[in-house]
Length: 128
Image 1 (spheres, rainbow, N blue to C red):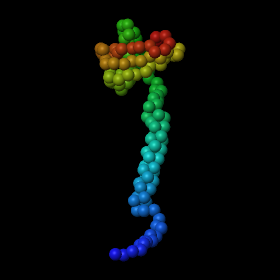
Image 2 (cartoon, rainbow, N blue to C red; image 1 turned 135 degrees about the horizontal axis):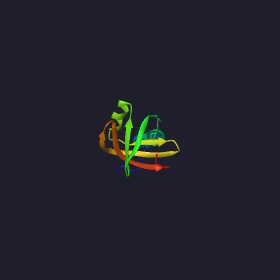
Image 3 (cartoon, rainbow, N blue to C red; image 1 turned 180 degrees about the vertical axis):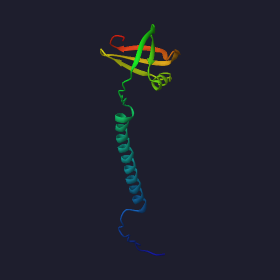
């Protein structure tokens, strides 16, 4: 039998391998979070300023507008290209002298003789 105290000396080492790995993962996680948070903040500002903003490009057209029925408008254009565009199923804004603004929308209700009849709604002002 051995008697006596057996002592072992352990050298004081730096952080263990597992501790270093945890620190590295924590640093990587923080960098990734900052990257995505910063990117989200940046691109949300871009979407707000560019993507969702309605930009109007005023285009002057020589159109003749005639009331067809209640809530309908007959639109005639002397330009064949403009007349073709007016037949497209889309919404258009109309602004006229006197400060009025209206919206032409929906499908073409009828057409003939170089004019189209579409649904019309006055947004502001008095009808033309």
